[in-house]
Image (cartoon, rainbow, N blue to C red):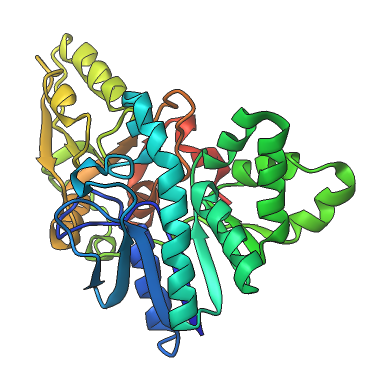
Amino acid sequence: MNVLFLTSTLPRFANDMQAGFVLEQAGAWRRESPEDRLIVLAPHDKGISRREKLEGIDVRRFRYFLPESWQWLAYPAILPNIKANPALALQVPPFIWSEYTAAKSIIRDEKIDLIYAHWVMPQGLVARRLSKKAGIPYVIHNHSSDLSVFAKFGKPGIGTARNIIRDALAMFCVNSSQKEYALSLFDAGERGRIAKKISVLPMGVVLNEAADEAPRVGRTYRYEMGTISRLSRKKGLDLLIGAAEQIARTDIKPDIAIAGDGEERTTLEKMPSQSKIHFPGFMTGRSKADFFRDTRHFLFPASAAEGDVEGMPVALLEALCCGKMVLASRDTTITRLP
C-alpha cells in the first residue's frame, strides 16, 4: 500500500525544535509494515531541500509563497505565527492551494492508496478535496484545537468540518474531549454512526532507555523537577517559573530544568531572578533519554493561549512510561487520557 501523509509541521534539519511525532509515526509504520511505501508531504522553508530522506522516510516539501524567504506561516506553528502577525493570514490560501496541488501530483505519480491527514485544518480540508478528485480514502488525526477553527466561520465553517469528518474513512483524536467536540457538531440522529469511525488515539511513545531503570530510594538526581517541550505560550512555562520564584523567596530552591527550544525561550530565560531554573536546550535521542533519567519529577503546566490548546503532550506520556511522578495542569488534558 502506498500512503501519503499530509502535515503542516515536520523537522526541517537535524536537531530542529519542530515536533517530530509525524516522522516517528511514519517510521513506526514502516517498521511494522515494511511492504508499505510512505511519503510525507510537509511545508517548505527557506534553505532546506524540497525532497529528501529523513530517517529513511521519503519527505517532500511544498513551497507556498515566493520568494522562499517570505514563507513565514508554517514554522514553528501556524496559529501562534498568525497571532503574532495577523497579516500572515494572507498566506493561508496559497498554503492550502500549494499543499493541494503538490499532493495531487504525488497521488498521480506515486499511485497513492491512502491519505493520512494530520490536523483537520488545513490537512483534512485538503484531504477531502483530494479524495473527491482522485477517488481514494483518507483518515484524519486531530491533535489540538484546529477543529474549533471551523466554528469561527459560522454555519458554513461547521458544515465544512462535518463534511470532512463524515467523508473520512476514520478519525483519530488524541484525547476524549476532542472526540466529544467532534461529535457535538452532528445532530443526535447522525451522532451514533459518526461515533463508530472516531477513535481516541494519543500519539505513540518510544520507550527509551530511561524506562529501564526503576526509581530508587536515596538516588540522587541532577534535577529535582523538570519539563520538556517546545517553549511556546500554551505550555504555561511562565507559570512554572513564577511559582518557582515564589517559593524561592522562602529559601526553597530546587533545581528545575526547562528543556526544549522555541519562540518564548528568550523571554523565559529573563524571568528567573532567585530560583534555580536551568535551560539545557533542545534534546533528542541519547540526550533526551538522559534527561528523563536524571530528573526526579516532571511538571507540565500547560495553559490555553487564546484558543491554542494542548492535545496530549507526548513528553507527558513519555514521563509516565518512564515511571516518573507527573504533575500536570488540566489544560494538558491529562484527565482525558483514555
